[in-house]
Length: 77
Image (cartoon, rainbow, N blue to C red; front, side):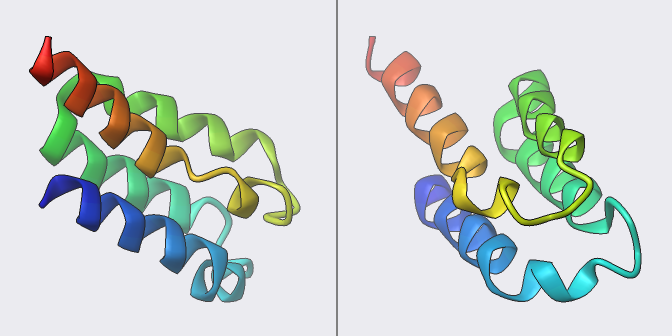
């Protein structure tokens, strides 16, 4: 279930997240908060998206999905 939520976060970032550009870093703040609730401190990796102030490149990197897949792999081990 967490993986599906992470995919939805990334889809939101890829589509509607670009409209949030007038409010800088709002998408990253929401993404980090939701990922932190699901995955703990590992979610701060999502904050790396803030290094792209144009909001153009970070949408193509599914950060939340990558965090979710790493979490699943850790849980399986």
